[in-house]
Image (cartoon, rainbow, N blue to C red; front, side, top):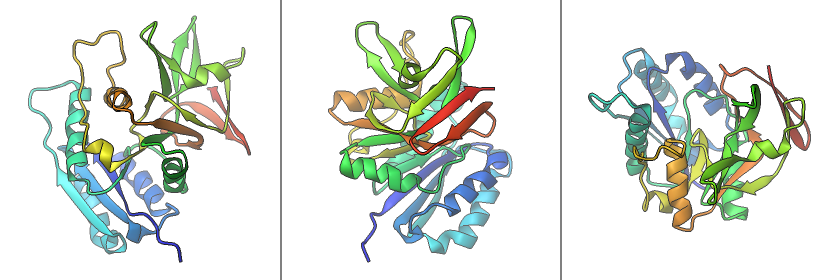
Length: 260
């Protein structure tokens, strides 16, 4: 039997009790040997039942995995900026990781072949950072349109160009073919990162940068790009946020996303 690569699934939780059940269901259904998975979770100062729910799962199911670890990362005192809190907890996870990681947000629904698709991009396309896609809504010319969380950076205009905008039609329908595409930024929400990237980079937020999106993952990816690392997304690896209002249809070779 072919041996599988050991990876670490990292997830940050903060008052996530409403999402924990969905997250754990998706985790349990992943089509990848549990003995090749290290679970590395961080509780970022939750005041609900998040930590108890996670601890209960690990007590019952922890022996099925290669290793499990739940760390406490206190929230930064007197800091309300969300991105700074995210950078702090992500850096704590990065420091504890012993292998390549797959970071998964606590509030998404992710498919059971997620690990296989991410490792395929790493192995076959030499992607050092790679991710799946989701859709969100932006206003454009007085109307709302769906775009995806994958961007290319235009150095001339100093703006991010959304990969999905090239596939919008006049009816605000995004019909995206399945492809593996090199980008300048992907999301941490469902994301593979090589250990050697983590050895060279940490998350940060540039408070002086008003022209760019002040997202932790965008800054991280741009820093990685400057160091020569390759970033890709697989448009067939779609994950969703349960609270977002989209109509999504997945076909054999494309995905169709409508704003509802």
